[in-house]
Length: 99
Image (cartoon, rainbow, N blue to C red; front, side, top):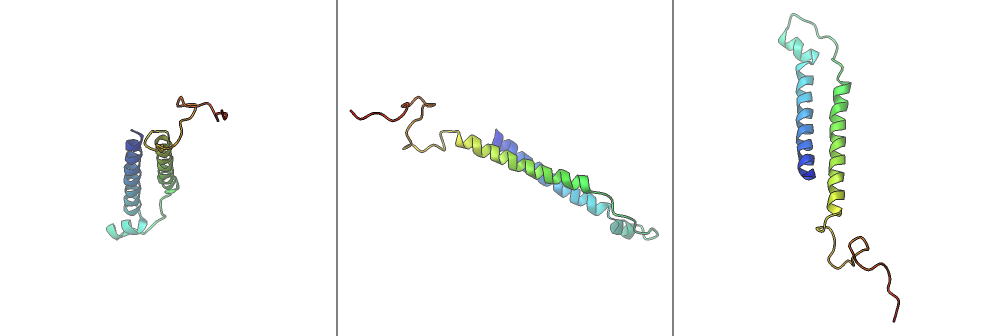
């Protein structure tokens, strides 16, 4: 389930990044000056917070994938069959004395 959320976060962060690129292009003063030749190019709109939202979206993706890694490490898929069992798994409590 966590891997599915991580993948969906990747897709949504990528879609938001592409959408922000389109918004920047559509609101560019030079693009608007091409569409409306009788107007002058003005200032660029402030996109700092939008850029930060895309960056934090991808940083959150790193957290999701890290969470997937730690979940995987706790599953039996990651454990080597030759590893001895631990106390938590109901195995021996420590080194055994020689007879």
